[in-house]
Image 1: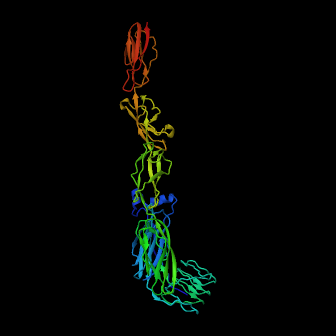
Image 2: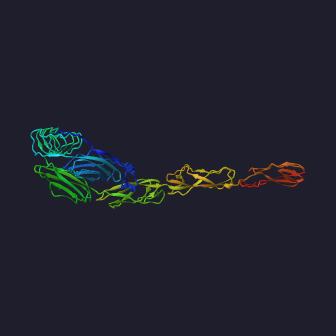
Image 3: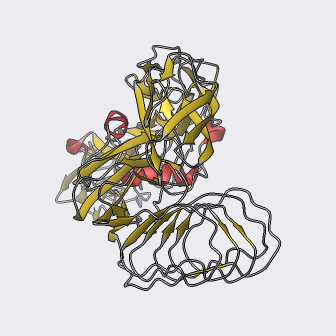
Length: 575
């Protein structure tokens, strides 16, 4: 059996993990985070980035039941699914966690495009657009029989073949590309089937000789019969061959607890009327319709779990039984954080809150860093970014969920105070010193390294009239892990400087002689004189006018910047 036609790519846009420019999810908005931050947080937590498969959706055929699924990987559940664009009329999608199931019976042919988006519990999301082709088919329905001669049917193009039976030969399938589902089988002879490209096969047949079928390209096969010779079937053009009744879909989409569910099963490849009969265990709240040509499983499940059942298909000439496993998942819930408080190192304890919706179940918040102690409320013991996990463990109705988030812990403010100083005019500035304000959390100055920087405009000759002069203090090399710094400037006060008079002893002068007085003050200010006894002073010249004791006093009375000097007295006795 040979099939050959052109392969069409059905991925129309590469998947994109939405970044900061995309609309934020509600969870991301509540946390004030962009998609980039969400993705970074997930990667930091060891969560694989989200992705969607690149394989094509298989073609569907007008009027034939169709089933396929897409599964996103990465991220963290629970997931939400959104679909935009157009699906083929008659097809619907069913979200089940990170699995998107497409099923139904397409009613129109053509090419259709749809975009699928999966969002995880943290708000990370991935999107991919797919195209899907619905093809027209023609149908022939040969009577099932034992075929004694080869070359009865050839399959060359765009074929759906439905059959099911028992395979007793080895090497039945050779697959180089695509998918195959043939259940269980026993094999005795080699080389019955060769399948080379993009093929979905559900079959089971007893064959006595090899080389019965060759399927080369894009073929969906469901068969069932007994054949005695190779090359039993050759189907030439756009033909669907049905020889044994089967059931579609082959699997059931997952459901969710307390959410209405409906799935219809149809006979496929039947000869005449077919009856579908179910057996097995169903979740409470769900049931099958009465046996008939179609069978609908519906209801609202009230318990979660995995529920196996089988459906037997019986038509006028054949029967088959398909096993199913219905998975009912717990309902998702979302954690919403309360307001994040402003927290400072060494400050008061703080509490965090969160609610789980729609469950209303209590949320537990734990710290995942060493920056706090306690169990809600928490006590900040270091500055930095504290990490927390809000967890709702779930119950019989709701799945567990977790949200990771951060709380900034600000540094405490430590005041650094410049010490006020005073110095005399005409003296260099002293070394400036400082003191710390109040530490928190039992800390001392040992937690601070480095020293502040000081500046002032005062120089040795800055006048007293400019008092006080500011001592400006800045951070310099000060550093502390848990503190930031504020600064209080100090003052420099310039006071009057002392001064001294240098006055050499006077010589003994006689009446009528004179002497130039040369006393000096250390300040450089002029010195004045007073005299007693038989003498007088004019322009610093001492003149003796008689005999007796002469006393000369040198004076410097001070200025704005200098104190008065101690007077110095010199004397002699004129003969």
